[in-house]
Amino acid sequence: MIVSSLSSSTQLQFYIREPSKADIHHIHHDVSSNFYGDDPKPPDRHYPVKHAGLPRGLAVYPLPLKNSDHELNFNVSWIPPFGPPARDYSLEVRSVTDTVDCRTPMCYEYNIPGESTWWLIPAFSNPIVETCAVRPGCAYMVRLIAHPWDGQTSANLLVELDECVENVCSCAHSPRLPAPLVSTKTVVIHDEMFANITWSLQPPQYLQRLPSGLRKKSYIVSLGKQMVSDAHPAPWFANIITRNVDADGLISVGDSPHFILLPVIGQKGERKDKRLKSDKPEVKLLARVTLIDDRGCLGPAGNATAFNPSAEPSKFSFGVYAVILAIAGAWVLGVVFVLSARFVKHVLKSLRSTPVSAPLETISRRPAWFPLQLRT
Image 1 (cartoon, rainbow, N blue to C red):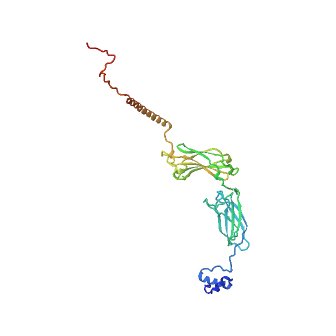
Image 2: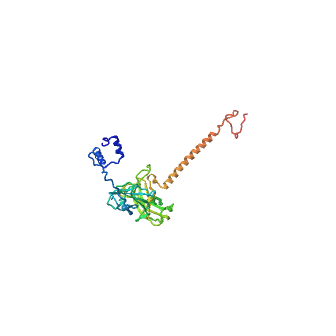
Image 3: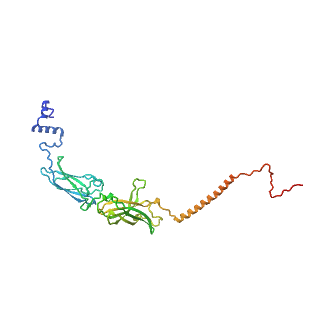
């Protein structure tokens, strides 16, 4: 190396003085020949990296996201920077609203071509819950970076969205919607079992925490069969039949009772042969009713057990039970009477003392009414 061929004083001068162009060229040539070998040469120091300029005119337009009901995407546009052009761009969208509905991971796009002046983010909907999303009613910080980047310069824009944007509304209030009160019982019609599901809607407990003027749109009524036993911490029910019942009116006033009949055997493939004695399900059935508001948001579900094979009532009627109970009661009373009479006799006999003859009395005593005849 060039350092090893210099004296100690020369080495000190090498680190202190500004190297000349010849020195720089010599050092560059020596290092590349020893350390890099056949690899590409390092960047020429005569041509340092030129960082891209700052993009101008950053603008954001929210649009409905395709294949999604309550999410948006941003159409981000900009004007190319003055000065050095951008090789490519990277785009970041961060949520700055710390609520349950708005707290989502950052949306990030990179390797956007340098000649581009707009981009869509996120580009498509994702069925995974814990993923990047843009939702109405939230605030987002949009950041555009031009590359090569100096590590500091970026175009930033704060975007605050309304509750409803382009007919896409926020569902942050959905956990606070009232849950329907559900009751159900099974009935048999023409040898087929049906679930008679009845429900009503109470006024919300905290009306001020819901959007004003919120109205009912419909109810989703479903009947599901249990797929996991009750021993599991979270038993799961798979829907076998679902119906949509229209509704109207303000949510703030609740709703009057509704009812619907749903067949217990919802699919033809699950229906048993008519020659079999029983057509009843072998697992627990759960009736579920969910409210949908005029924004298309689903509230908490109201549940009720529609059928439980372990708690199925006996086939005996009440009259048969009454007769059996009367016969059993009479038999018990008879046994108690007989045992009690024998017990009383035994106690009295044990308490009565045995008669003993007096020592001065004759062995055979004559009755008082028999006259005494004296011998002459």
